[in-house]
Length: 379
Image (tube, rainbow, N blue to C red; front, side):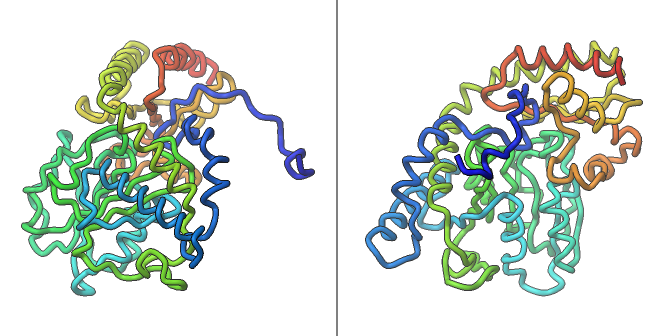
């Protein structure tokens, strides 16, 4: 071991991880295959040798597999490999060929900050909207909208879009954030004629640095990062072939088990809802509607700071939960979604998010329900 690695702190005990929407540990298959793939495919796939060609060949295999998992066809769909979901969302919004500088962008006001903050940075007219509690788009999106961008599964409440695009203006392109849905729910790529879709590696048990932007080739995206001509000249830089392969393998494994696991996750969500209703005597609001993705449950404990409760759960009981979107945890801001829904500031700061993975067990949910009243008692 090198001197640097010898100075790393002692490892913490493995937690009861109920913050899986933030990303979870790589799947066992990734840990097994990492060294094997790194030995074979760590060369630059954009070179001229037979070793580069081998890397390009397996990268194309990964693209075809990822498209199959998303229900997309290779002949009319492209794949851009990105560092993470935030980068992929930026790429989609900044590269989209808006017809005019004043073209309208309809944006999910409760979406991930990678969507909302990037949209606001484009200096173009915005139409913020929210899906209703049933997951439907609003009926009044302006007819001159050039792009509608929203989440398939909301990363805070788990609200699941119903897949009905008929309420959008005819022919309106769709950018869909599917990071929380991939490997858990079917993707409506062709059913709803989605134009661009963002997928995340770490949400399906793949490497933390990995994501993909799927796009219809009929829409000529504009280059974003130049300098080398990689990925069709749209996104310069060397593609990490090993991470792309591991991402695809983890996604395939998650998708293979998605339908058989869903009833068990639904039962866990119901058990958690009932437990919270009992602990809160029916007074703790649940922000996740009953028909939301069962992988996420967002609620509040009035009178308590959610961030402090989450910290105490981790420190004293080794249980991880979230307070909303992990990507905004350091900003100290309350949930943009809850603000848009008119939830008071003090109640929004009381919010906690519990989120599951396919591997989550009833014992982990029970451990949380037992630890929570102890933490509140010591608060």
